[in-house]
Length: 266
Image (cartoon, rainbow, N blue to C red; front, side, top):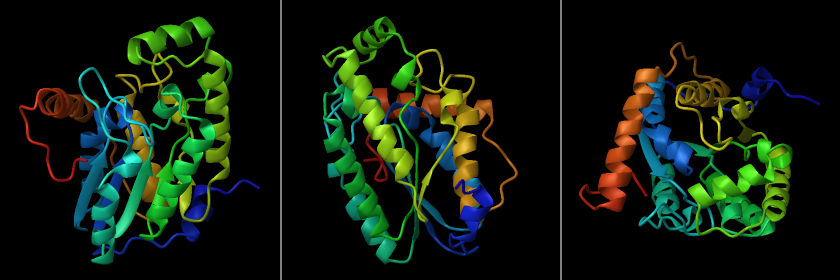
């Protein structure tokens, strides 16, 4: 049976207009590029509620394996202190809303699908212990069936040059993880549909002229499920500014150490 967004919303506790909100954003490169615009948009939509945002993101980041870009080596998201900080804030009265996205780098780091699934189950359980409303996305469906092996190896050599996983093994891993994710939905754990249409030429990253539409869609699903009416979308200019913010954080901060990491960034 297909459950509509309106039917789901009826089963979810709406946000009180004065409830303090904690947003937990977990992901890799797509989130790293868009998180600043996305967070600004959610803060605006959730007014007058007080909103705090915690990020665990970064290009090449994994959920259960260390990963990164060039000289950057991010710790696995599963071992991040973000969960302890979030737990403390949830106990102090914050309503927790979590986004789990950009799931897939671990497959390319040759992490077995069953291990990644176990880690995702653990993360979902930790978030639910905070009474979080969880939203998540699947891995790109294109890699389940239609990406040519030659294109896979080209992308692997460019984006993850140290990866040695084979096309067949990666494809089987993606299929297994996506099957788990498509079946993981529940009253408080929501799959965000329709994200594949926003990918660019590489079928991994949201296109430069589509990313603001992608993050507007994510925000729409999350907020409507929580009973919050929204009237605005993220503009292209806002997404371009987010790319600039990412440059400052990733290149000047994480890579070169010229910018201190803010306390909400893990």
